[in-house]
Length: 421
Ligand SMILES: Cc1ncc(COP(=O)(O)O)c(C=O)c1O
Image (cartoon, rainbow, N blue to C red; front, side):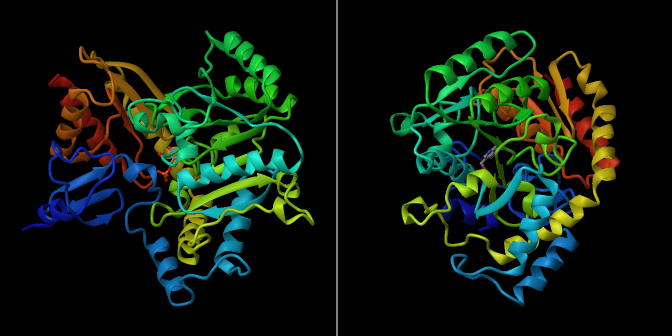
């Protein structure tokens, strides 16, 4: 049996209907933007392996940092103890974040970073003796797969069996030039009528919703209202963080500073799982008390894992020197995609920083489960490019180290596949 066949015998994969799914492709090696399977096929990873990879597969700087840390300290309980990789990383993250951010809380992935943010915000109000409990979120949002994160995300096919377990959330539309006034009215109504604890959002790009993009100035209008009513603003930058949108954080395009940030994915350059939730001094201070019940009782066994922190420290060092590389990618993305943007089968072409997305015009329903999605996915793979359409939305979100030739190849393949439709 080859690896894919052995996998089928014993492994259950995420987001996979195994009855109809083909065997999973066995990847034996990765280098820069390219993945190699056990039959010797190559795939350009144009989705950065679920948006995690920034500086390429098997990046030597990050690999060396991990290797070095392995010989020093692999892990230690993070309650009552600390270590250099975590302190270094906290200082580095704070130097990148807006200056109102003051403390770093570690967890393991994007969903837990969100879960921590929600609990932090809710308990902030509890600790300060307020009845605020309502959360506002955007329709179509995706914040992760744990129960809190599912609650603040779109209700649909993915969480239907759990719907009755999810807490109530006030959902509002994503603002645009046409609906801004009505969204504003709705937001004002909710903050007036409810005890609102927090507003959570994916700044500038709703990733899983289909790379839906919206303007910083429109988000700022809502954040201004939220700030006026002391609603805590939670920026979920799990996907948009670390240069994806062109700036280190998407929130850097905003005038209002979020109170809490959720970070993960690219933080370790795509090497190891790590989640981070950051907050302002004011939030942290609400937990300082003689009363032990005001403690933030949350933690995971692998909180602040030194090896993950070592990967993140190397990744952050690379990021601080990557501005020109990111700027080049932003330019290549817009230049090289122009034929795709003008293709007869393409609509709603959009770009935010290093991310390009467009919708394929289809007679099928445009949902995640439509046949076109599967056909596109398979044809791209057959031509050596890993792209994972969200319904009829195709997006290109490559590692920053993809070279121009590889990106030209990605768009060539997209055009070839579009021409077959
Ligand atoms: C904006 C956002 N938040 C949270 C998550 C959840 O992250 P994870 O898959 O690491 O739990 C994701 C994952 O795609 C995301 O895009």
